[in-house]
Image 1: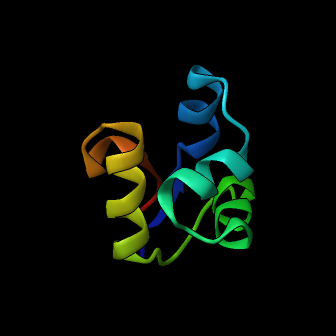
Image 2 (image 1 turned 60 degrees about the horizontal axis):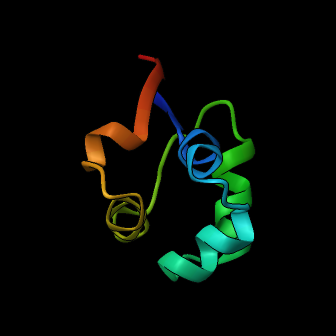
Length: 70
């Protein structure tokens, strides 16, 4: 099973937003964002959260993650 890393901190930093601001703007729970942002590799991610984050950052879902292990 592959692992993915989400690029939340990178996109938030480009906009000058904190994780709390990303949470407020996206509707994704702060604790979820914190876990996603701090993890070096996730086995699963909520697709609804990815969709909300992609809309918030105005990027494609594919741009939100990178595969760190296959």
